[in-house]
Length: 378
Image (cartoon, rainbow, N blue to C red):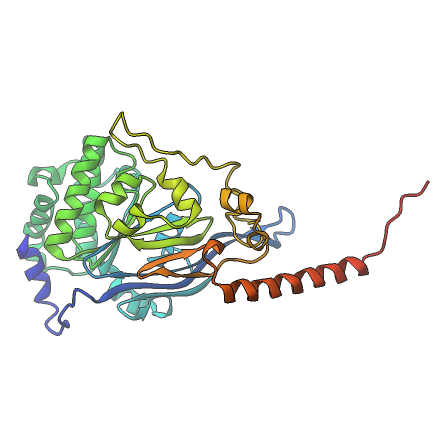
């Protein structure tokens, strides 16, 4: 597989020397809202806040795991990062370039470098095309290799992903789920990418096949210095493959840290509840399960203040009024460990929040006083 890298680098003579500490992707306060329209006049009456202001960085050659409940905005975040969806506000920087400020011509140049592996390996493959053509279609479109080297190049890519050369002429329905996902990985790898969004790539596979695909992704990462954003709801898989982990809840990033730190000492109450559900293969070990009450609120009408306060045990036990009124700041609690929770407010922040709450209550009282009293007629 070294030949694949060497062939492509012939076309990039002026490429800068790659630094392992280089930040490949940086997301700054990214928001993605979907408008809600009325059924009759088609007027916008609200927004579904799928992603509501998230920020993080991913260094070259590392994997960031993105976890959370279904519907929290993980997949939407991944697709927005790749500009498969339009952004509402914020910035997505790939090697310092804002992807959403690039022209179509400029975006086309970096498209091969930012790829995605979808969740369902069957629906993401065209049933009318043979495997060799599925993998090679974009290679030919972007002129990755000269036409005379095309067949050999596709064969090398397939071999690197555990596929045989005679598979080229077969169709997706002739393969198992694990083999289909290898085809999806080969399709992304063929473009010699720097950054790949893995959108729950093993959730539709058997456990034994999951391990094979995860090991393949890790092997390819080491061989080609790839950078991954690994989206999943399987925490054991995320712990195995990720260098850093971000936890999402209702469109917000509530906690972020290195994998070892966040699994050893989760700070946010939601993260603690999430991690308490991880099964432990020891019959004698008893983990204290944290059961969340209620259901996840609607992203079209999220709670005021901290979005998690309606289900938070800490908020209810400590009767923290601030949680229901003011959104907690996303800040660094420990070196490299970020969290958004009022439990970790400093004395100065508590004082400032108390002033804000008093002002909010004063305004609410004034507005209530202006409303006319409607007395029931006897």
